[in-house]
Image 1 (tube, helix red, strand yellow):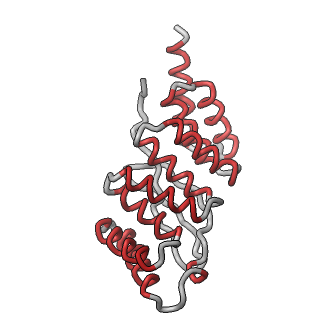
Image 2 (cartoon, rainbow, N blue to C red; image 1 turned 60 degrees about the vertical axis):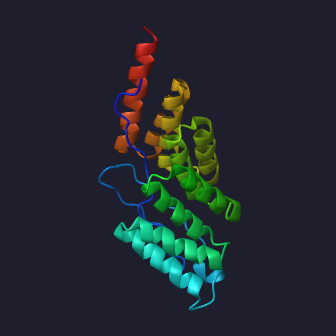
Image 3 (cartoon, helix red, strand yellow; image 1 turned 135 degrees about the horizontal axis):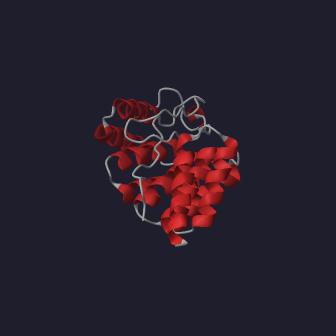
Length: 206
């Protein structure tokens, strides 16, 4: 029984070139902000003025405009020319998820992880997608990996707590909500998670 969780986090801003950090912002329909790891430098993968970089930048710009069809098209063209760009897979995965193509989204996040296994944001976003697939074991494992790589990000504890709550592991979900609030006392989404977990625990004890 889930009382009021109908939202999942997304990265609002995709990965960018030239050492620009991910910048998460709130989205009207989905209130949880993302964590902020730094994407790999695009210049390490592409020479200046390379067509792959141009397609990548077009895809990124299309994503930011909300044109996810064009984002997928241009990022796919970039990946044909440079199939080892983890950021391109990651951004296309975000675009697929915004199109509600969850299996393709998970596949792209998985490819990004294979190329850059130490990026916590990649695991975090695959966790989001796996929750949408109702793969709660996989989602919990991914958020645990994100926490291992970046242990001070409250959003990862929150999202793992959400997956655990949906899986029925209320004590573990409670611990994750508390940890998220220890790291960010004003984190409203974690407060909502904690309140719901406590309600469910009370109901289950009757």
